[in-house]
Every structure is written in structure tokens, then in C-alpha cells.
Image 1 (tube, rainbow, N blue to C red):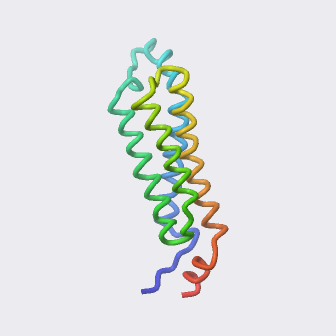
Image 2: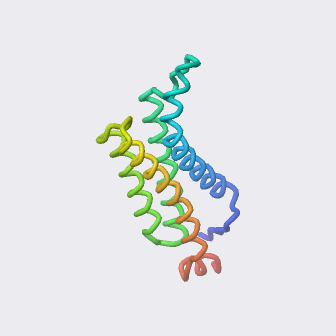
Image 3: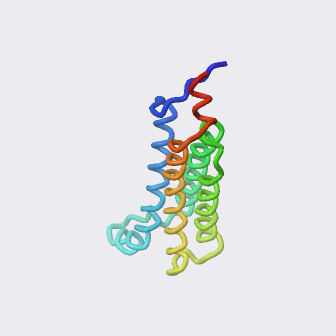
Length: 142
């Protein structure tokens, strides 16, 4: 079965862009949450105080981020670097949410660092795929 893999393949490119945007959104949300918690109640909005919203964003970032990295891992580069960066960031984000007090300075800093690391894993994933190797060249020749 011949599978053509190109950098601009429609579905894969859109999925990876969406995963990257979700990861960056998570980092921005983690950074903006302390300010939003202070300002939004003045307007009667308590959206960011929702535990369900937090878990949904964390779950979405996990599914999209890991899916994007796993797809490129199996079809392009076979490098563990993006996965290591992703899981390190996710461990930091999860520990900030479940172990540390996320309203403390330490919890906020760890959550922001974790979300930024998850976003960086998407960029590492793209970079590793571009610097690819014999496996990628072999797949393109088929």
C-alpha cells in the first residue's frame, strides 16, 4: 500500500495546527487565569472558576497533542524527543492542577511552564519531522 506523506497534506496539517493552537491556548489560559479570576467576577462572569472547564481543556490538550505527536512519530521521524517534551510538560501541568495549590504562585508558575512545554513539544515535533532522515526519504520514494 502506497501512502504519500507530504508536509502540506490537508487533514494532517489542519490537525497538527489545531493541536498546536490548543497547546498554545492552554498556555495562555494558564497565564491569564490569575488576572481573569480577579477581573471577571466584577462583571458577574465565573467561567474560569469551573473545574469542569479546566479538566476539559487539559483533556483536549492531551488528546490533540499526543495524537499529533504520535502520528508524526509513526509516519515520519521515530524520534522520542517530542514525546519526552510533551510528557514532561503534561506531568508539570497535571501536578500543578492535581497536587499543588493552583492558586498559589508555585502552582501557577508550574502550570504555565507545563503548558508552555506542551506547546513547545508541538514545535519540536515539527522540527524533528523536517530534519528527518532515511525513514522519511524511504517513505517518499515509494
